[in-house]
Structures are given as C-alpha cells and as structure tokens.
Image 1 (spheres, chains in turn blue, cyan, brown, yellow):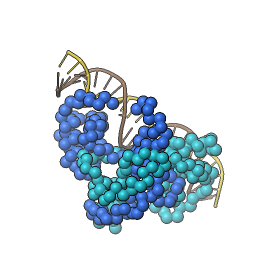
Image 2 (cartoon, chains in turn green, cyan, yellow, blue):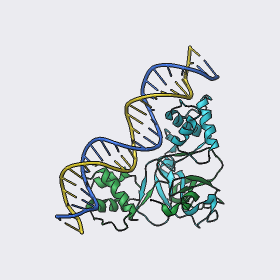
Image 3 (cartoon, chains in turn brown, purple, yellow, green):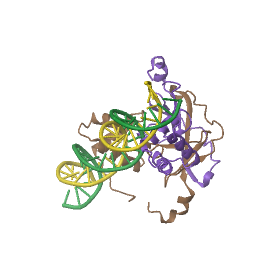
Image 4 (cartoon, each protein chain N blue to C red):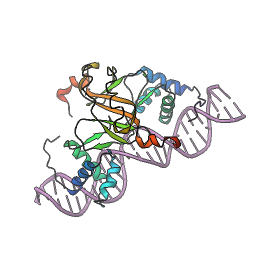
Length: 136
Length: 136
DNA sequence: CTCCGTGCAAAGCGTTTGCATGCCG
DNA sequence: CGGCATGCAAACGCTTTGCACGGAG
C-alpha cells in the first residue's frame, strides 16, 4: 500500500521482465521460470512469482487470470455476460453485449474463432456504499 | 468420450442442480457444497465436484473459469484482447474490440463499471492442421 | 448382476509464505 | 549498514483421483 516502496533493481527482476517482453506467448509462471532459468540457473520459482507480483504492482506487466482462481458455476444457459466486483469478488449477470460486436477479427492470428467470453469489472452496490471505511 | 453414457439420477446430482438453479450468485464449488449440505448432510465435496463436471458435460450448467486455472502474464500494456486455443491452451493477442461496444449497461445490477475483459475462443493453426489424428 | 455413483481420504498442482542469508543502494 | 530481495522448502487452497462399498437399472 505504501505508494513509493523502494525497489531494488536486481538481475532476477530485470531478467524476468526482459524475458517476458521477448515472449509473445503469454507464458505461465512456470513457463517463464524455465526460460529465465537458462540465464539465471539458480533462480527459484518463488522469486519468479514474487517479482511478477512486484512488476504487476508497478504496472509494468499484466496478469491474466480473469478473477480469482476458483471456478464458479452457473445454471443459467442463456447467453449473457458477467460482472465481477473488484472489492469482494461477487459475480452477477449482465445482459449480453448487444450485437456479436466483433466478428471482424474472425481469422486473426490464424485462429478459427468459435466464441468469446466477456467479463466486466466494477464495484458492487454493497462495496460502493461501505467504501469510506474500507480497510483495504 | 462415449457420446451416450448411462447416467443415473441420484438425489445428490438432482439436489446439486436444483440448488444451483435457485442461486443467482454464481457460487464456487465450496459455496454450493455448503448449501447442498443443508439438504444432504452426508454429501462430500468430491461428489459436488464430480457432479458439477457431469452436469457441465451434459450441458446442464456452465463453468466460469476463463481458461485453465494457472495465471498467464503479459508484458504488453497496450489495450488488446486475447484468444485462447480450446485444444492446446495457447494464448495469442487479438486487436482490441473495435469500439467500447457496451458502455450502455453502465449501471446494470447497480454496479459501477470500471472496465471489462474479453477473451475469444478458437482453434489455433497448429491444432487446426493436425486435427485429423487428434487423440482428444 | 453390472457398473455407475458415493464418501472418504490422499494426492496433485499452482501459488504463497516463513526463514535465514545475501546484496543493492 | 539498513532493509529489501533471494533461495529453499514447507504450507496453502482448490480440485482431482484411488479405493471399496452401495444401490439403481
């Protein structure tokens, strides 16, 4: 939370960032670990995770995870989207995004596109109202 | 695999589905387990997971997880979307979805919307080409 | 009689964290 | 020198799976 933490520029951190910038495959932590290890054989997986978190905090990289790790289930089969509260993690339904908005990039990257999923982020009413005394 | 597996209609399975259909909160497996347990005190968490998988296979429910469990990292900070291969899990970039498509439901569900994330699904060129002998 | 489904518990897997040491600034 | 960062390994949380038993068809 301290806005300006004193960060050190360690070879591990620099190497992790450099390796990630060279890759376009959106590697997992383990995949990135394997690549970084070729340059820093003694680096540990824990260090990779810690630095990925630091780099994300500093806005130097992004983490793709779409919500928390645990899966959620939905008995509603009608097409619709979801919105997730960034404070408490609650998930609610959203009306489907108007038209199929982007059939355009139908063959981008050589993929055969079969579908998409859309998730909004926001703050739910409960968290919005109690914001003032938020500990977080 | 086998297209028409013989499914039994056990009280556990029926209760799990019924409970999920009554909920609009998109519960996690554990949350659902707690609710189902009020009706079937002896049910196990493993059974909940197994039946959720069965129900998903049969297209009776949906599982929200947005790709596999493990996080992926991206050093590209430019706004863009992603596409994930449903066969091999590979992730590639997609150009951003044209317009901000749906600022309309800006207050749906009472949420204050702050952003969204879009992920396409499809089959990557490699998997598309080798499809014929796919074991899967 | 078959074999699918269950409960229980242990294993898996990705990720996080405690601790002593190391090294940047 | 002070304290953030590292390496190692244990811990953690969610999910999956092996096993033996039980009940539906």
